[in-house]
Length: 77
Image 1 (cartoon, rainbow, N blue to C red):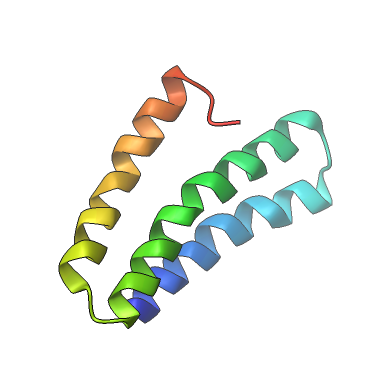
Image 2: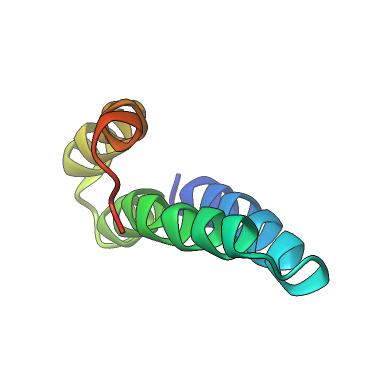
């Protein structure tokens, strides 16, 4: 479970960072920053799962869609 959350973090944040490096515009950098902030959720879930808190990891993982939805209304940056 921890490995899955770690992979989700790497894919989500890595893709946005890669795009910002290759097309460094304000919009791309802002999107990479938002992805990094939202990416902290699966990273924290992975760390929790690694240390045996599987239920806490699942609750954290459920927060990601909510964070993305709220991020459209109020910028996390």
